Image (cartoon, rainbow, N blue to C red; front, side, top):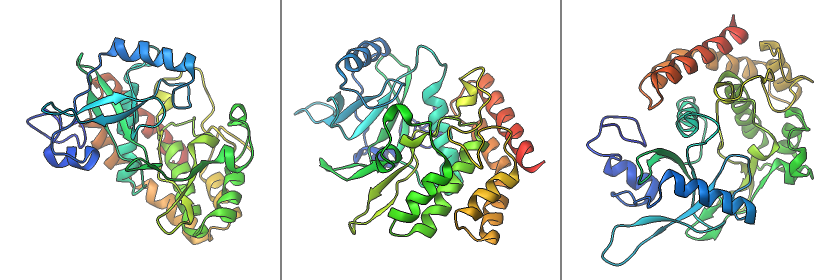
Length: 308
């Protein structure tokens, strides 16, 4: 058996330590829902607009602690501490793909939201993530780039990475560091075939000192594995384009935004060395053999495109 949090061998779905990191207890809470339950609930919540923004069904949960019973995750509308994404009726293995991609980001030293796979009562795997804008029931102020740039949600694809960089320089308490973090995340998204990093997938969050900084990465999905017929490589323009991107485009975008030439070159060099590490992790993931092969081929292709 494999731990759903760290993908290492385990006697149950979670090592006690892994469960404690995500849920605060050494025994993970029960998910008292089947795949069909969640699809029906998600549909009802979308109709009633009590769902987390986005196309993929997302349900807000909190941990319920009944007396003399195991803890369980319960759907609570918009104010839960966790977000659950069940299997999609449209795209195969979407929870597994998102969880693997988040792990690859962590392997690349990118800060991410806490996340894991979790098993439903019917046996299927779902993706779960801990909300970073909640802490012990208190809301932490967090604004996405749609809000910060004054854009409507339906215009979330109508902007550029350079525009986000300007907002980071204007609003972040440490703009230099956050510019590097932002462009590393953009480069990572390209190399993992993620063409859905729109304005709502980049945010600034208020830190413990009351200042704004770039939020840890969330909603990282290798969309090229599930969306057919989309030839765009990024959701927002980079140097005026979304496809046929080259190493020089990333270098120019970074330096134009204020990152020193040498630092920009170091970022590109760092990611040129991660292909083997990523492929090894994908190989031991919980993706099907077919999807493991497809993901490996995808990142090889992207690596070749950027580094030759």
